[in-house]
Amino acid sequence: MNATDFIPAHLISDTPPDGSPPPKKGHTAPLLLSKELFNELGIADAQTCGIVIGYGEAMKPTISGKCELLVDLSDNKLAEGNIYVLEIGSRALIRRVKLLLRQIILACDNPNYPDMVVEGEDLSRLKVIGRVRYIGQRV
Image 1: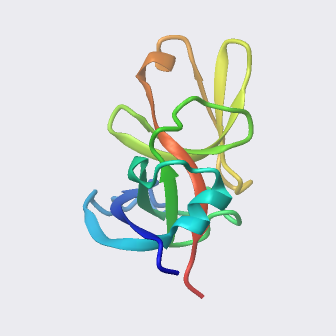
Image 2 (image 1 turned 180 degrees about the vertical axis):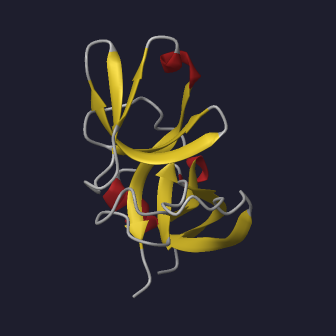
Image 3 (image 1 turned 30 degrees about the vertical axis):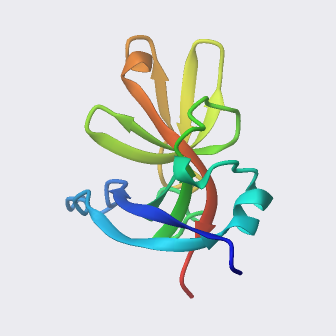
């Protein structure tokens, strides 16, 4: 594994289920990932990626507890069924996207959490940070 890239890491979090404030946005140490992994994931340029540390329960079982998400920051065009890091106002979200004619559903994989419907004026407030391409979790 001699062909590698360092990926910067950023902290982002869903609102915790108990109502406590989420961890603040910040920085953690970068990760070293192989070019082979980027090729396998279809990512042409590692410099367009970032690591997002995801916390929360809303995307369980897909994203469970604290996970490191490889996010393609250049892939910000929403596609049906993919998982994205998003912002609405000051709120950061990690959600699966469902596209409808005049609305976007930000779906939770955990059935205990409600989906969010984005429509009308709120569509212009929705900022796509990037597409989640890989989920890493410690065992």
